[in-house]
Image (tube, rainbow, N blue to C red; front, side, top):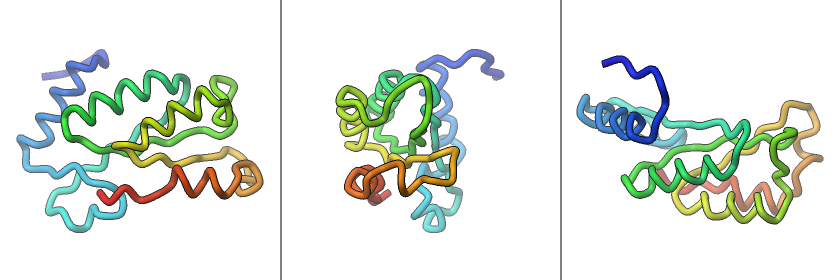
Length: 123
């Protein structure tokens, strides 16, 4: 079966195929513990709210993944209270990693915020 358009239904189908074929969905820190690891990662390029929808879908299906968040983008402000609240909600089931397209990563995000979001959720 070839899936041409992304839908939540097609994503759930993909997750079932992953499990059916003997793969274990795992994180970057524990992939070596699985015989056939599958690491799910998502880039939040445009819409933090849509990423939250996907994270909730994954949580409802006992799936954990890693989301990469842009620090410098024109589509959302990671430091706004609205986006910050959404990202905090995502940490319930997902590992969040910040990425910056420039060399001044440590100067861009306060250490306290970095430490909160970049915790290892244990998967």
